[in-house]
Amino acid sequence: MLQSKLSRHTLAFGIIVIASLLLYPVAEGGKTPLIYLLLILIVFAAFITLKKE
Amino acid sequence: MPIFATLPIILILILMVGYRWGAARAGAAGYITALIIAIALFGANAPLLGYAHTKAILLTFDVLYIIWAAYLLYRVSDEAGAIEIIGEALKQLTSDKGMQAILIGWVFASFLQGTGGFGVPVAVTAPLLVGLGFSPLAAVVIPTIGHGWAVTFGSLGSSFNALISATNLDASYLSPSSALFLGLAALPTGLMVLHAADGWGAVKRLAGKAIIIGGVMGGVQYFVAVNLGLWNIGAFVGGMAGLIVGVAIARWGEASSNHGRIDAKRLFIALSAYLVLILFTVGILLIPPIFVPELKEALGQVAIKVQFPETVTSLGYISPAGTNKPIPIFTHAGAILLYASAAAFVIYKRAGLYVEGLGKKILKQTARKMVSSSLSIALMVAMAMVMQQSGMTEALAQGLADGVGRAYPLAAAWIGAIGAFMTGSNTNSNVVFAALQLRTAELLAYSVPIILAAQTSGAGLASVLAPAKLIVGASTAGMEGKEGQVMRAVIGYGGGLVLFISLLTVLAIIF
Image (cartoon, rainbow over all chains, first blue to last red; front, side, top):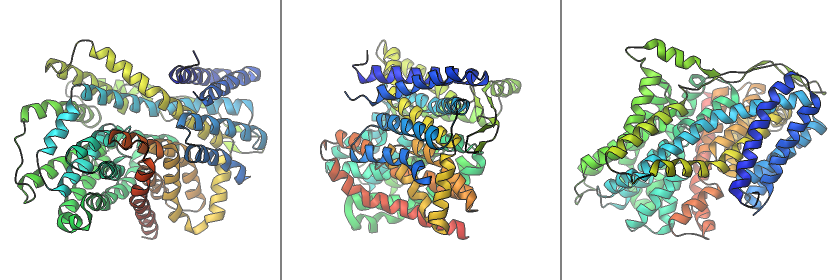
């Protein structure tokens, strides 16, 4: 799935959107470990974007 | 500290210009760098970063709503052959090289920028100019310079919308200065197009006509964006006015002697997508529906609006509590574009301009085309928001204010230009730099609308020079691999236009 650029970009975009939206209720609840988990997911999305074909 | 705050931006610049990385990859690198610096050096904590990312995705959605819908409208009309019909009609109007360059490489390219952008102005007009006998180099250079002035209020308002969203300032506060600067930039643009097309002889021969057409386009854009408040169709209507006046001048001027017959009905159908867009825009934004004004108000209430608390870094930098810029789902500029796309699709289908199953193809093509640019915007916005919430933007602004000082008005347009050159996008430059420019203007007590006008004008005019954009344009005119030649040909014109804005900024600040 990560071979094609379109697939990687679609996956990365999806992760960023979902994780960013989830960060709001998680931040409101003060759940720090979950916040970092979601941030790690977004960073993962950024790393797969960095991958060159 | 300011030097560390610049690292994400410098990194993006080096990666895109030096190593020719795409915007998405460079944006990813910039985002990761900003996140590390924010945590390690600026005291950003978990809740702050959480809220920053949510703000970022809301801002991203606000920007992408227009971009996706604008591209959809472009696909709907392009698949119907509408763009080609409009271009062919223009070709038949005049045999004068200078006038052809004006009509196709400047006015039509500006109209296309108004309706879509995304590299379309050059991609569509360069082959038309090659067909008229222009050299491939001139065919790329002419529309590249020609459409820069229309970028900010083009793409159906996406770049200007990004400016509004990134600064949380009102459109009516920002638009007068921006529309004035860009309207004035249309004048030297027309003269540069003539020079690129046929040298100083064309400039001397057609300067008067170019100034009339430029004055009309710039003036109409100003009127529509500022007086009517319809900034999302400013460049679109300006381009359309330019087409009407330009066609009139070509048909009745001495430059035309062998103009061919134009199929008016075919042309009208081709233009119908854009006429429908004007109707929807005016109907939804300007004139309340006659029978159910309550519906318009009710539709405007359906908006995404989120309350954020105050955040404080461990170094004491405070981001005050507040809401995001509300995103009205049904009256957003993106929604208007969707309505226009749907209506245009029905019109073109009934006119028999589509083959079976084209609807799905258009949607699929739109999604495929938009994914990478959506990702690059999401990452750039996330980077910008992390920098803002952690105080990095403030540190940068303070550093700029201390370093450049009273000369800042001269630099503002160049900052916007660098941002657009490295990201290939007026929108991205506004997302990354608008908050910085706003804060620096406030620190130095300069007019915020004027400095932000310099930001977006410099960005719009320079975005057309970005390597990624030049690659697209060059490929459509058979100049693959010769992008360096194109860059050398356009950089003087582009630099001249940014300098023009820079000097306008100084004059505006003084007077």
